[in-house]
Length: 176
Image (cartoon, rainbow, N blue to C red; front, side, top):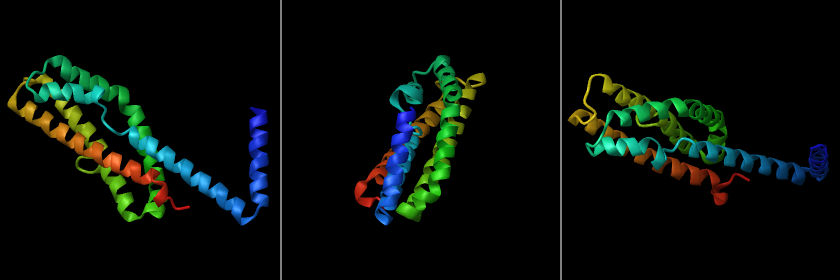
């Protein structure tokens, strides 16, 4: 570990000694690293097929059981900390994104995180759906319709995440 730190320190010193070119190389590396980290956090906001969607698809098909609603509650509990981490990380990255890609990209990030069908709101919708087991049949028309609405919103959100993810990592658009 000490050798790694010493080598990195030597590299940084050499780059700084190169003057503006070295400093720009460090800045460019830092921006790319931040972009990769933000893209990773965006990935953490997407809805995977093996997560909530498997339960919602059964509910939307009218084949739900109380176990499907229970599965949603368990997934909500198990992913809460990770989602909060990614949301916090992306909130901190927002200003850098605005500077690098413009206001439209920053607003797209806001939409992904907090809009009507953003990650935060979809999680609340899932929580409300999962609570319905207390007084509602999981196969009721209202529950099926709500599941279909959430599935459509998840599909849209995942597409928005993929689009912003690729925009962040696109080297032709990097602010180098």
